[in-house]
Length: 363
Image (tube, rainbow, N blue to C red; front, side, top):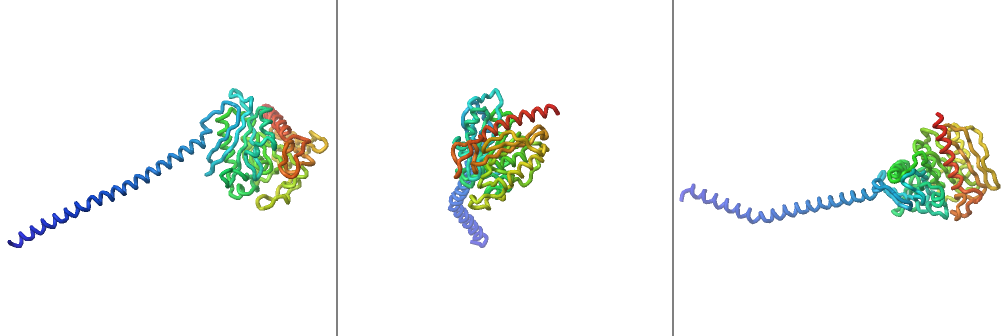
């Protein structure tokens, strides 16, 4: 056998050996490749499921935008804004009909409260007032670090707590909420009002500053104007209700000793300074006229303001940090019964809306 034959034989044996090894390894390679592909497929499936779940959640959250509330009752809605799920409670009055537009009142709870607390008729009576007068009342929930939404606050500028410290976009949330509400309900867009207790009253002031294109009037109860910047595009009617002996948001300015941690609040602007600020903003007469005076309370109004709006202050001698006319105390002192915050507020809202409408027609 010559050398060439030996080489040929060796090559044949080598090729056969390689083929044999490949045959032995190929099932393992196939299995490995399958397992890798299977893992990749499983990962893609998981991702698709997660995406669909998020999509469904988004549909549920934003479902308010695709619905139309047809009948009276109580509803809870949520929406996504600025990375947070924000919730609000809606009360549609008994006489509501889709064929006619209804006024809208946004009612903001106090610091440390929530929408359910503000909707409690024993404390605030706003649901009963809604049914009596025919306006839709909405109770938004402030920012809370708890899933329950309890102990919530509003970013009203210089106050309060987590909402302020995290610079929560509450104004943006309110804008988005109103847009959703006007899709669900037949709302009179010339009669969108805001009211609130304490930190909620402060939030109402911020809306007057930054949403004057939407908000017709506000009624702040036991909460002064602590906005940092305020440049309203148009005049807004302002009602302020406060007790002289408020021991938290002091009538003359500053935070009361009732606050355990003053870092969560601020050195509150006084009631007189808050009112004067809006007398200037609205270009009103500098002197007021008493519109109500009785033992334990008085109201005074600044008239001839630009755009037919008004600025009004109502003061009770007693009641502390509470909602006048409420049947259940919020703190250590029962609310004043000399006036009803709800009655004064609604009379102010309706009268100022008529006045501003007349002023606009005459221009």
